[in-house]
Image (cartoon, rainbow, N blue to C red):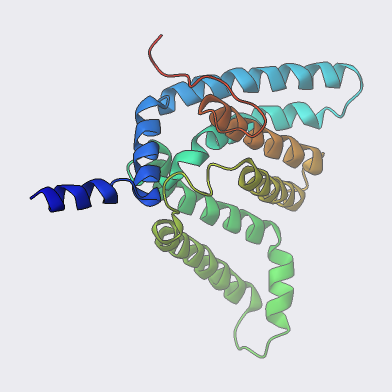
Length: 230
């Protein structure tokens, strides 16, 4: 009996077990999703004020459009680090809305560039009207993106408190988001598409940074963990 207890005690001191206990203790102290939304909103308001001042000093007016569009991106960034937890609100939200968002973006770009799609179809030796075939191809593409995203989200979900709790990963996703927004804006012939994409990407980074700061996981900046206990 004593040997069994001793063996269990030694196993509890392994690095893996200690790291797991540390993460569980952190989870108990971490702020709720609603708290992260509040802190991200405060950071967003600071960014919005800076954008207004910048526009008043001569910056492109498209920056203000980017700020308006960027609030959802800020909230998405604030929730992103917790998508690695299967029961978290950000993960459950992502499972529902990411496939729909990706499918909608794909459909928007294809419809905006329908002339190019038709021209590409006309280059292929296929019977039938090119416009009809192009429409069918676009429909299949949208459905495929939705289906693939739905299947891949659970597969790609990382372990808890690993890569998603990283400002570097946040910056990379912000660059992707900014590129997507710019591409959609240009496809819709929207003025200032690049500036809007840049601001939306920045809003996402602000959300991620606010989450990591509150969780005391932002490099070079250490603060006391903020909990819901006021």
